[in-house]
Image (cartoon, rainbow, N blue to C red):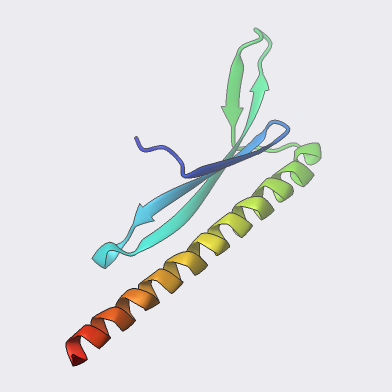
Length: 93
């Protein structure tokens, strides 16, 4: 399994950002989250369920993920536009 491109942790809440490849090689991002906790045997466990006091932590981590993905998509879009312009210029020359 591949590794996430970025992780954000706030308290026990962790958000992971994954880079994926779509049709024709286009990239897109997906986000997963979990909450880490210790069980009664003092062993670390993971869940996708949140308690009320985890909600602000999840919001903050997800906001950071949104900012990261938005900036990456802007970079990718600018890069793809530049490549298209170079290809058009080469074709016209």
